[in-house]
Each structure stands twice: as structure tokens, then as C-alpha cells.
Image (cartoon, rainbow, N blue to C red):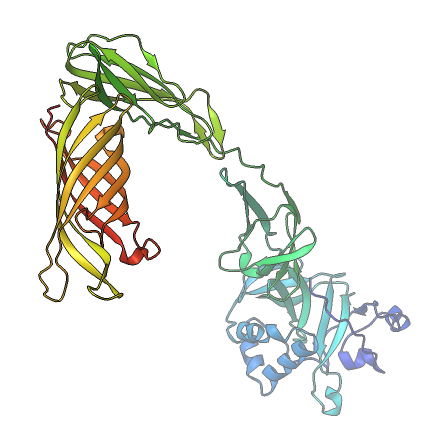
Length: 552
């Protein structure tokens, strides 16, 4: 309830001035600010309005008197409730009739309705308006605080109520004097604010999300709900969402204020929010092994040796080598020999007696499960490879003829005839080369070849000289039939001034795995020893095809 200021006005001849009979004890208590003025009679020169009111309809006449509306506003302003003035004047101006109210203490008419009631002896008024100096011709309104009706009988009054700022003001006008009086002020209790906290934990990260929400059917009376976490201000809940989100655990405390900045009731002021448990460890991603197998064969005395190469198989992690088991079957599907478990080199051999198609099935497994970071390495994988074992003329135990056709260029430092000077020249070349190769059982090959590099120079300002050469090669065959090799080359055999040894490097890739005659794409380069300190001007390279004339 809003505190209403109580003031006692003591004026000589007070009873006469007010038209009220005051009990003798009122004078004795006049120095006590809590004393009530006991009134026994109504009416007289200090009445707020004359003649006496007869019914609610006469209120309109009273309000129409010159200066009356402003006098009412002045009394309400002095009483500290000027905000009720418009509603009070509107009620008086609209009065036409009244309803029976019984005892004024029990009357509760709706706002804007006038009730005719009996003001009972012993009932009190918070204040009563009057005109203290009316006999002197001064009709300035005043106010007498704390009045108790001490008459022997009830007096007739008109009662109405005004609601403002969630307070009900009950006003009374005695018919005898029309002195506007405030009988009571009643606070309209609002529904307390209730806060709820929705605590959500992210199962993947363990992160906390605490959403605070405020609820009440009277939230329009609330300006804000303050939130503190562990004693530290954290934010506010305000319209329209009335929500607040935080990721902090701990003690959440709340305070609410109304639209006037006054404290507002709450159902609870503290909520404890627990931290989220740590997330469970993420499941390991399982990585299985990869399987890759290649096959080749070589004839041996009275048989054929099939090589199995699984070096490209892996468990997925370099920390653990795979286990590889290989089964070999012939073209009828029958097993050949025992299942072969490859050693750490991931290669092995089978020996077969007859030609035909052979198929190997490899099973790659991780010997034991291994966890590395977010991965778990385990499982098995299978793959297959085939090889056709046929009679070959260039296998171990025999030599075969091959020839190369190549195109490229060389760059040589050449002497200028009849001088001590030299010059560097690039020459496009067509290479023709014939040789003999012997392939060994361990997939190594030795070869020798004679060739000619035909100069394709057509510029009269350049030297056009074809060159005869001899190569000695050592080659290693890899999985899939490709080879890499090196060797020594004797270049430009027929000219003493430009003859030079050279370091040979080359490679070959089969163009058709099952061709009747093996055909390779080859790339070849030479570094000339003459002027080796000037590499950029002494080299040769070309590329083309090599055809082995022996059948597979």
C-alpha cells in the first residue's frame, strides 16, 4: 500500500469552523501525529459544497460549480495522489444514479459506479477535504487527516472507487457536507514472478546452456528481472522474451522491480545450476587394411616361378605392418601348393609345373588392433591378381633380341674446326637401337645394344653429324612388368674429337601386359663425361618404344 501522508491541522474554534463536533480528547491528542479527529456532527460553513447532496444526480451540479474541479484536483494533489484526479472527476461528472451499498465498510462498487451507503460509527477516513476559512470569504480547500466518525448514528454518504497504478482508492462524500474524503487505499496484489531454468547439456561437447525464463500473469507490472550468477551481475530478463541464456554453472539469484522501479515479489530468488558432466570419449573411427597384389613369372629349370608382390598392401598406419596370406589356384580352380604367408618383405614365390592362367587371392589383416588418436586400425581385406604363364624365349637361361625407336635431342659442346674455340649446339635426333638382353631369375636384366643417333638438323649454320653409340645396360623389373635401369654409353664412336663416354639412365613401362611380343614405352637420358662440369650444355634425352622380339 502506498503510504498516505497524515497531517493534523489545529485551528482555533475548529469544531465551529468545520461544522464538526470533536470529542474533548481530540484537543488533548492534537500534538500526537497519529491521533484521530473524532467527528460528531456534519455540515456548516466549512462544507465543501452547499446545499447538502440529495442523491448521486446532484454530484454533477456540484462539479459544475465554478472552480470546483480545480479545488478537487488541489486536494488530491496535496494528498499525494494527483494521478487519480482525472478518474475522480470523470466519475463525479458521469454520476446519474447510485446503487444500494449497505454499510460503507462493505461497499465495493465497480469503478465509475456510485454507491449509496451508511457510514458507521467508529469507521475512519484517511482524510477529509473542507474549506477552513470559508466564513472569512476564503474558499481555498484544505484537508483534515485522520477522521473517526464518533456520532451516535451512521451518516448517509455516496461512495465510489478509482483504480490507478494497481491500487483501489475508495472515496466517500457525506451528503450533509459533500466533503470529499478518502476512506481507504488497497493495493491490488500482483501474481509473483516465477523463474524457471532449463538446463541443457550438449552430449558431444559437454557444453552447458542454461535458459532462464520469467513467468507471471501480471508481467505487464514488471519492468525487469535481474540475474546474478555466483554473486556477479549477469543480465536481465525484459519484455518481450523474458528470457536469458548463459553457459555458466553456479547459483543464479534474481530480483524483480515493477514499472515504478519498486521491488516486485517473486516465488523464488535462487536456483542452483549444476555443471554438465564431461562428454563421453568419442568412438574410434575404424580403419581397415588395404589389399594390393601383383604377379609375374619366370621360367626356371623344368618349371615356372610365380612371384607375388603385396608391398602396396597396408594396415593404414605405418606403425603396424600387415599380415598377408596368399592362396594360388590354377585355371580349373584347384589349389596350387600350400597357402603362403608372406614375410616382412611382403613378397613370395610359388613354383608351378605347367603353363596356364593362375589366380592368387591375398588376404591382408592387421595382426592386432591399434589405436592412434581418433582411429582404430583393425580388420581384414582381400584382393586378387592373375598371371598367364606361357612359354617365353627371353627368360632366365636365354637371351632375347630387342630394338628401340626413339626421338629426342642432344646438346654438345663442339670444337670449331681449325681453332681452339668451342660452341654448344642442340640437335634434334632420331634414334635406332638394336640389342640383346638376358633376364635373370631375380628380375634383374643385363643388356647390350648398338645404335645410331641420326641428326635431324636442317640449319646450314649448324653442324649436322649423326652419331654411332654402344650401350651397356643393367635393368630391374618391378611389379606390373615395368623396369628401371642404368648403364654406360660410348657416344659418337667414329669421331675422335667429339667421342665421349656417358652415364645412361632409363625406364620402361609395358604398353600391353598380354601382348605376344612385349612392348615398352621407354624414356632415356645421358650425361656426357666430356665437359661434365658444364652439365647444361652436355646432355642427351629421348623417348620412344622398345620391342622384345622373343614371345612371352
